Length: 107
Image 1 (tube, one colour):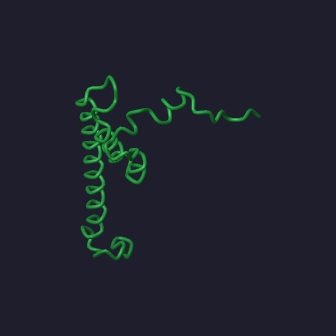
Image 2 (tube, one colour; image 1 turned 60 degrees about the vertical axis):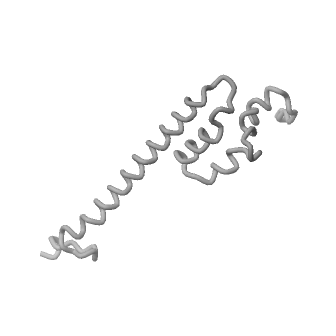
Image 3 (tube, one colour; image 1 turned 90 degrees about the vertical axis):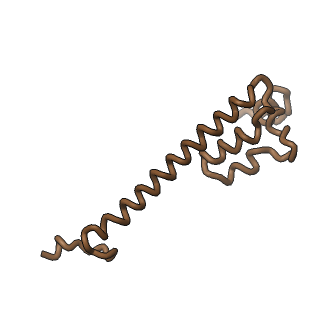
């Protein structure tokens, strides 16, 4: 089995730590913060964090990507809320008052 190359070649650095990853004024790498968030929120923050810092990419492109992930998260949250409301309302509509009993099964 070959040993992994642990050298810090320029190519390896462009993959693991490209310059735009550490250019935020705080000096903090974005992944340090976003790995504690949901996927959509983390990606939105990532694009906001690095907007305008990546060479050859317009700032508005990153802002639009962040907006896309925010809209996706809004949709996800709305679907979850709708599902919870639907699930919690189903039992009450049948008259079991949240007990989980099936009135039809008692016949």
